[in-house]
Image (tube, rainbow, N blue to C red):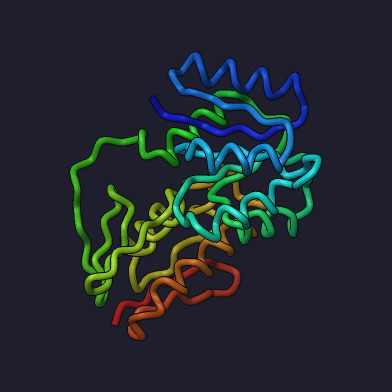
Length: 223
């Protein structure tokens, strides 16, 4: 059974989340503060983390940063009441793959959890060549030589769209609506963070570039 570690200091909300996820056959361990969450993470090694940003004793950003020192791949979703763009950017820099702004629907949380765990879709494995890389959108991996890098769900989805439209301009608003569901300002900042992460991973091949096309979007240059 998939194990989820939930860290949320609002007791009523934590109970709703826990009960809702358990009806979907998830096993949920709920913690009320960041220190407890970090202890439980090392004790149980769950499959996914749902972290509130504002928590007593240790905030969610600090918890994520500590976990990322030893675990680069476990999916992390932040819950936040904050609405400042920098808070969203800080969350992704701390190691999150996704975030939800309160209030949110339980179905939205469940869909995002399923996406990060790779439960959505059932395509066959397909490897695509990109310069010196091999990209597998189903397994969400990017291989360069013998080095295989794990991608997050959104990194993989974003790279797949860039490759599909390689050497052409990929419309920014269209990408945001397709992957993030809305082309608002906060999602736009989130996408910029993911573009930066992809550029870093692709930097091993100097012939591969992701260019900003001002006012329009991005262009993946291959060769």
